Image (cartoon, rainbow, N blue to C red; front, top):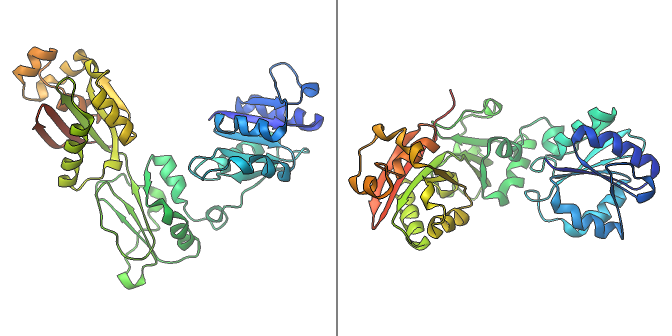
Length: 341
């Protein structure tokens, strides 16, 4: 996490310089209070905050809460994109988690700052106060994508209020110990909200609030002819996922051979899906060549007996093959990421 520590007064600047090295953060102070290694705050303070706001994952302000609120008000977007904001008073008595407590990590940063200066941490998020699980923290910690995030607040409120929240998990999904006390069987009439943890497509359960936590556990291996169009690749992949009843949101990465680094169709697919591409060398793929049938055409073209299966197998850490198909110069291998032992 890249962190900025910001102060305006003499005493606050001393405290900022105590916090900064421990967090390995950038310290911003007024010029007359700056010491070696500090950055200088210039111009209008609100303009300054707006300029650096999205350059950091965490911002620690050593000043009054009211000043901070006025400074950040014009650049706030949402809990999933705003950085963590922590406020510390000049005497170092309190460290307050002000913004993005869960998804942005402000609650954790608050505890860290409090530990450094011996302050009282102040955390007001309801799930922490009531000691119930936070779904957005689970999503962040385990790399899940939150689908139907518009209902997150309503589902979280149901948990905080002690209502009946039905958790429905795939059998092969990584088991989370934090959830064990929440997995109960309710009659449909008793359920107030739903949480699904699945890579499968599901139908909307009811008019009741629900969210889907999508594990990033699917690898797609791709082989294709040169100049393949993005539209053809996307249609191929999406149709196969629909047939398999899998969500595209559960794709962890796209895997292929490194000679495809400039293949626009693959790069556009990765950008559209918001997933990284993992490239393997011919030598990498040869290491697992004996596990799969050899394609003489691919062997003579790129020097290895296959691309899609080989790269998907490697990227999934030797996972399970779900599907392997070919169509119009495209080859697709769908693999489930292997769980850690």
